[in-house]
Figure 1: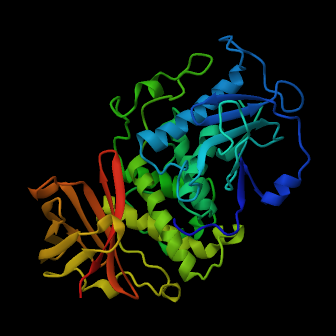
Figure 2: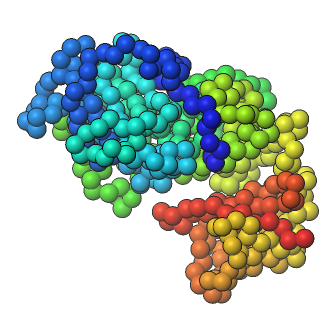
Figure 3: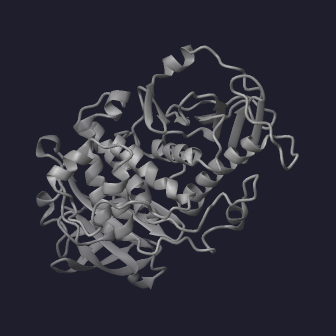
Length: 444
């Protein structure tokens, strides 16, 4: 997601209710009771009141001087951010392309009436606190001051929205809320939850099913996100090695663990989908002739094919039997698929075309149907790679690499597309906790 937001919108979520607010509407609202107190837990800053309409319950079991409710909400937000962005390597909204100068998550505890939480897309200057700096910027959420985080996972849900916002401008409900509902299982104890579509497919789903899907919001979890998670991750366990001691030992004020169990199904595929959506929204912006990512454009139904394509393209990397899904041709000057049928052939040479791939060279040595062998080299390493190739996709795993010079590198997945400059391959790579992207173009 590289295109700047020229018309910032904001999204508000309340369990069972979706609220759409504009930045001007929020600033014009009368101020409720002033949140004069604050609590800091690493990048999490919670602002609260101890009296009035917004006042939090005052119980303080540990006698820290901070109400337990405040500390417990901060712990859930911290745990969700740490689990997704540090442990599982989802894109971190703090310092992302969209929020480059943002360094904290600001949580306001207020009386939200019947709602439980609100997450806002626009960043803002952080409220000044002694522990901060005048240049600090924040992404923001509001949580109901009466919400008990030991019984309600809303703070984690809203934190995942911030991860989504920091990566992609797409805000169609079946993606935004459906995937966020999946994310709730990260800190819950209920396993994956309902799976109401066969994980074995067919993938892509039928056109009739897709038409139903794009009109869903939270319930899209059961018919898309959970089935994908189950299909790609049969174990769904987070190892003790992966989960650091601070996360495993974190407790609410009643002594119960914030991380209810060590199970989360489908984290890897969901992370890859979020990253892919950050790439596809640039394509949609150009092809749909958007002048700005307005609130209307972020939720436009025209986005749906691009979102679904990103999902299927990533799913295919994990499950090779997934069939092709192409965008409607009327929207697609960049042609994926048949236009690239002869691109990745024996003796074709692909050179690095961006700062991340300067000096890279990929030469196809053998091609037998869906299998290929190639020489991948740079000034630092030379590798003989073996993998899978289709008309629109190239991939190989590090275990199938013979390192002639240097290391074997990581797992690589690439999408073949054609634009006005000709064929190119957009790669995403991952090696342990590290990941990145680069582009190769076919040499004429």
